[in-house]
Every structure is written in C-alpha cells, then in structure tokens.
Length: 566
Image (tube, rainbow, N blue to C red; front, side, top):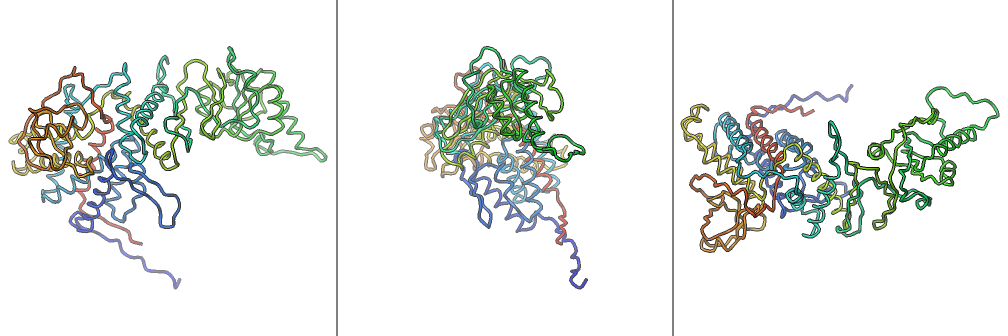
C-alpha cells in the first residue's frame, strides 16, 4: 500500500484552437499531408524507434495509422479521415488537406466560430447540390459500353502514388489490368440480386511489372508431388471436386467432438488411417478428380489418391476457401463421418500450370461464367510491390463504387477550382446573410475562406516550384512555370490539369493566390472530341467533401478538452 500514488486530476484545456502549440501541430500535419499529395508528391519512410520493417509510401491509408499524437484534436481529424479512406479507398488526402485548411484559415481570419460553422454547412450544400445537377460542368458520366473512362479513372489513382515507381507503359498496363479484373468480378447473366465476385492478388517479387496479368478463375500454390495434370487436363467434361474445411491429418482431436474410448491393444493410428483410406475409396468411386483441403492431409491418403489420378491440394488456407467455393459451387465438408451429399461436390473446367518467376501456380478454371479472378502482380522489389498491391486493391474498390453512381469528377485540381469559382459566383448577399444572421462582410469573408481552402487543395498538387493558375473562362486548374510572363501564358501549357481544356491565345489566366473578379464558369461542349486524362471518383470525393467540412466544424466547435493524465 505504501507504493500507491495519488490519482492526478484530469486536465481541462479551454479553447484548444487558441493554443499556439495545438495550432503549430495542426499546421505541421497539413504540411506533412500536403507534401504527399498528387503524382509528384514526396514519399515518406515510416519506421519505429527500435528498427524493424521500413515502409515507403505517400498513401493516406498507410500514413495516417502511423501518426501518433497526444493532441485529441489531431487524433479526431486523423480518425475521421482514416474512416473515410477505409470506406471509400480514395480522396483521403483531399479530405485531410481541405479540412485542415478550413480550420487554419478560420483561425487566421478571426471569424466567429459559430458563424464559420454555419457558413461551411451552407457552402457545402451549395457544392453538393451543384454536383448532383445533370448540367454540372465538372462531372463526367461513365459509359460502360467503353472502358476508356474506367481506364482513365484507374490510371489517375495509380499514377497518384509515386511510391509504386512505375513508368508510363507500366502505369497503363496496370490500369488496364485493374479494369479487366473489375469487369471479371461483375456477373453478366445473374438473375435477381447481383453478387459481385472477388479478385485475389498474388505478389511476385523480382519480375517486370509488365509481366503482371489477370486470369479468370483461381491460382493456388502448386501442390507438392503434382504429376497428374496430363491425365485429365483439357477434358471436355467438367472435373468433380470435393472441398474439406477440417484437417485430414489423422489427429484424434480432428475426428469429432465428444469422448473417445480406446480399448487396450488397439492401434489408434492404424484405425484412423484405415478410416481415411476408406473415405478415399468412396471419393474415388464418386469419380472425384480434384481433392482440396483447407488444412493438412495425411501423406498416405495423399499418395493413395494420387495413384488413382486425383489432384490433391492441401493447406489451402481459410482466405481461399470462400472464393474456391464460389468458383466451383462446392460446399465445404467439415467431417468424414458422413456420406458426401451430391450437392456438396463442385466442378472445375480445367487445370493448368502457370509460372511467374520463382512461383509455380495451379490454375483452376471455372465451368461457365464465374466472378472470381486472380491478379498476378509483379514488381522489382518488395517495397514497390507492397505499395502497388495496396493501390490496386484501392483501385478495384473505387471502380466498384461506379456501379452505384456511374459518374466521375474532373481531376488534376480542376474540380476544386471550378467549385470555388462556382461558389463565388453563386453568392447571394442580402438573402443568405440575413438567413445566417451575419453581416454582408462576414458572409463574404466566410465564402473567401471556403473557396481559398478548396483552391489550396489544387495548389497542393504542385511540388516543384511551378505556379498554380485558374483560367477565367471554364475555371480549370493550370500548372505553369514560375517565371512565365502574361504574354507567354498560352505557350506554357498545352492543357489544364484534367486535360479537357486546351490552351489558346484568347484564354485568360490568373494565379490562384491572387484576387480575381467573380465569373460564371462556362460549361464545355458535351460532344467535344477531347477526353479528360485525369478523373476522380465521384462517390469518394463527394463523401470526402462532407467529411472535411463536418470534421472541420467539429474542431471549430470544441470549447473544452478534458484529458485523463493518469
């Protein structure tokens, strides 16, 4: 009892955003995340204080979980952005940068916190209502009759992750593979409720990225002693398959639950082996050609089945059980004590061998259409391969979001600058200011904070000393050399950030960090032959917009922070 320490009282912090230390840490977090943004974002190396594995990344989904802070506000923002990323797989850095810019600018301009919150909510509703309009000039409808926009969307996500270290041909190759894999997981002729399939990823280190490929069906590690492929490969008739979820190693604990009585003088090992071999005879009689087990199969049973021309696959692992069952129609069997019902058997169309570097895989091909496919991802080293695998999984998720809302937004910062110009043009001073209970000057200040915060996201795409500009016709984002003169502006860039607007002598620009007169962004011709070269996910960015504003409003609304220091 003499070693007990008196409990310390909780620490209460009043107006945390007025604390210089908190503001400095928020500013540091904004600069850290801003430096990662876009195709030319700077990479971050993550490691702990005691060594171990080092991760190189610029992805918010990898970076945010590694950031630890004693400041509750930072942890709140980090958790909110990470939650968005886990649900939508894209636009995490956009949400973080926009959120932190809103907080920082509201602090710098000394606007009333409650008014800033009201104005942010109002301006968010202006943005979302515009984005849902059919004539929204920064929205592109996806045509699933062509894969071009899907490839552009996938390419935009993959190219924004420089840690993948891909050349232009490699980016295009991986983008096409991602779209191919996505389309294979969408059933073509399933009646009723459509259930999407799955893409399994197999990583191969030390091979060229251009060796990556997508295969319909499932690729599994080559079974040891595999010698029977020629006997039933390329058969016109489907091969019968049986799938086991329990161990067939002959352990007593795996046989069945309950009490096991062993009589004196009886060899339990031989009894169990006889039972396994008896089960093998039933499998052979049923004309099974592929025998798969999630766990271990007794060596004697394996040899017995192989001598009868059956392909044996053991140690499949739980992660492949569901995809294999979906691919073949088999139902996993948990015990060998009962007769296998006919509906439990699955079917495989064909078996073949695929080799990728040091890996040899067995390819199980489906009978008819299947929504299961395997992506073989190759890269030169482990670090690049790890980042590429994460990016491809995120890309598949974003492509799936297009099935719910078949739209994309213009990328390259053009949606941000276009929205900012639209909001500035749509401000209605007398009506809105009176409804929000503020003066016209305060309303204009709130609009300026919101729009400049949006524009700061577009400016964050540039890391090499060039200047972000906006054209005064369509309000698209342009990146120009720092020393360009007004007379040479049209010669400095061929197109805007998204690639949809081309430069010409009649176009006028202004730098994003300067004041410019309000104007109505002119829509582009819908049947224009030029297609955007950078696209963002509509669903992910719309949610990121909501998350950024709502998280900023929560931070601005915090009056006290109470921390338990014990």
